[in-house]
Picture (cartoon, rainbow, N blue to C red):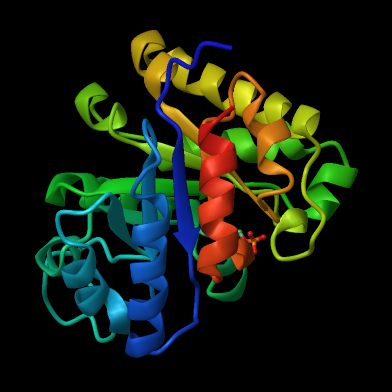
Length: 255
Ligand code: PGA
């Protein structure tokens, strides 16, 4: 299969790691992927390790992502971090709307849209996460739920901004459960997401990278990447070991 979109793999370290541990992991990932061609790789450490990791990875093949951001530039917003501050520490990407934030912290579609737009304005690439719960899948609401999340997240974005967005489809029931979506299940939703983007701009849709997330491992990435609309992975558990993440990147990039 001739790939039209450059594969992208992002490790999401979630709430894990001291600065020293994050530096060690980042260094091993950088060294491990340095010979892999035609792929984009990023890691998303905790906020506390972002600066140190970004310095360590400077000018190398691995970019740095934050796990969240706020939508305002500055002001009385205790505990929040602005996109410009993430650029300041060396981030290129920011994950927004992860299902853990939607579920545990009540993050709404409207907030995801504000965050993604603020990230774009600051020069970051947002990785916008969408995905249905098990109850939604079981009751046949998967595409409806994903449509609502995608449409809301991309609302009021100019085409030039839209063209810089990355979307991650992460079925909630597959995250951290060891139960990943089948390639056919992933492809159905990825294709659907691309069609929603195409309703806004066919050109943007054709080049937009849509990542799959949810129990992605070196052992299952190949069959997922073999699907036409799967362009990479957002990887949690398997990104916490450099050995498994590097193997996954190598496997995924070679499909
Ligand atoms: P997982 O997490 O790979 O551990 O399932 C993926 C994610 O939440 O981004």
